[in-house]
Length: 214
Image 1 (tube, rainbow, N blue to C red):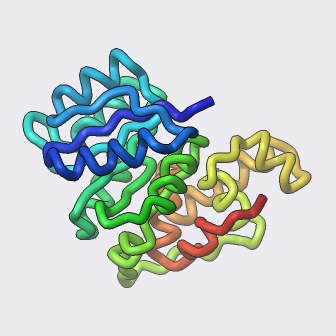
Image 2 (image 1 turned 135 degrees about the horizontal axis):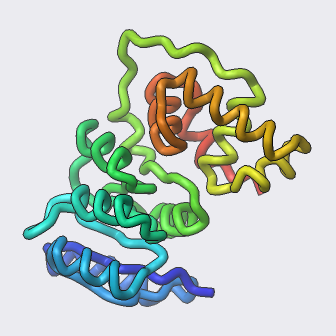
């Protein structure tokens, strides 16, 4: 089944180029386009796309505000921020608002396809260039065990606790216990923050996250 996508960008040429690519991909269905955040939010509510590609800076509502609304309403649409800005504050604000992906507008078609497919499956995706903006500071989190790292990486790729348990030959309750320990050690509240902090402090690498483990 094709991934249903909403595209929102206030730059006509950028939007047209991305739209043309999405229309050529048989595994994607571009269900709507928007040129401002308010329209994007209205379309997300009415169409309930699987994935919304949002420019981070748009008239009426910015991408972060739209992502917050999606999260607060408990909608299933996965948000990918598509932007020219790779500053750390934009990345962190986006992910904390509930965005599942962050890619630059210079992203290659292959990487954009990878990002869409990853978040559509429930995973998280950071453009390789974006990851370099997440810098280390003086905080040193308690090390994760080898098993906890495995659980975090699999969960970040979109696997449910049941699927992680099956992959690692452990119980679902054990997976939940590991996740609770991961959140505690990293000082995070959920999977998205845990991954962000794990990348920031070098607990896991972007290469590990993007690695195809099929």
